[in-house]
Image (cartoon, rainbow, N blue to C red; front, side, top):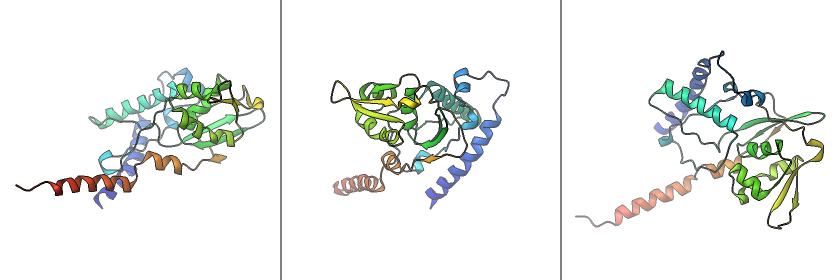
Length: 228
């Protein structure tokens, strides 16, 4: 039960830390123009800070996030270190949720998605058509994973898919009516679409069975050693 108690305390302490960090924001400081335009600020960020030794192992997943968001995480981590010295944050950028607002010609739609979906759709702000290979390189996501994860935006009618000159490379295009109308923002209002991240969560956190198997293997190795 000790681990459970620590896990609960992590969640409680995370809320307190979020509040403390936001109170350290100097309102007179210069705001990054790119972050300001995207509606991103520390007020939009809420971190869950866990004690890694007491939670199930968390697997990293390759992901390149926008510079404005990366700067925001760095700013948060710096403030955390100042408050919690000598502790430092190690971000798991593939975990959590992101709230997006996509603005179309006649309406705006809000989505809550897992982090991997946000940088995918943000790439279409400046370029309306991507091959799977180039989009994978831009987001840092393996092509096979990208082809699977992008199905979310295909299912919402935001993107269309076609076959390029190379049959092995899919081509993803922003739906014509939405070209030049899509915009990312840090809106925190009610979300019209909610993505259940069960599949992503299962891949991000190592299963209990796998962990038990590893521990059992170590136990068997110790038991098989001859006693002296």
